[in-house]
Length: 127
View 1 (cartoon, rainbow, N blue to C red):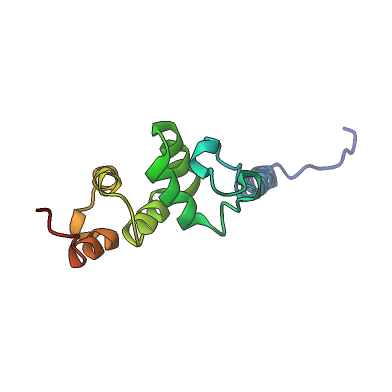
View 2 (cartoon, rainbow, N blue to C red):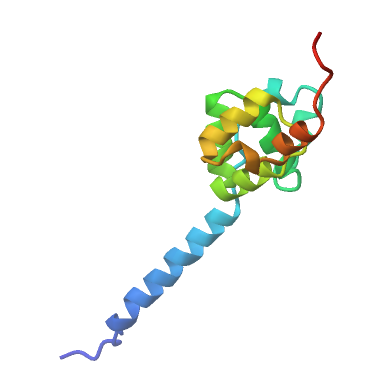
């Protein structure tokens, strides 16, 4: 028999697993920016938006002015926990957006900060 270099086949699954995990974390750390309609961010420079630093602004604006596909992209990018926290702590949302967000994240209205602030500051009495 010819002396050939001996391969440690028991180490192969470990090396394969390490390389798969390395590539997975490299890909997952570089998130692909979500694609939103430009009309949502009509008052800011759309190309300059930092989706990670201004996450609360982006989430509130997408839920306020976006359509269903924009909301899906927002939830995919930020995750349900971050979206829920941003919506629950928002200072102002229109009433229909509060009801819509309440249905999507399955939280009662009285947990929304903007709903509580709206109740504390009622509008003028309609005559």
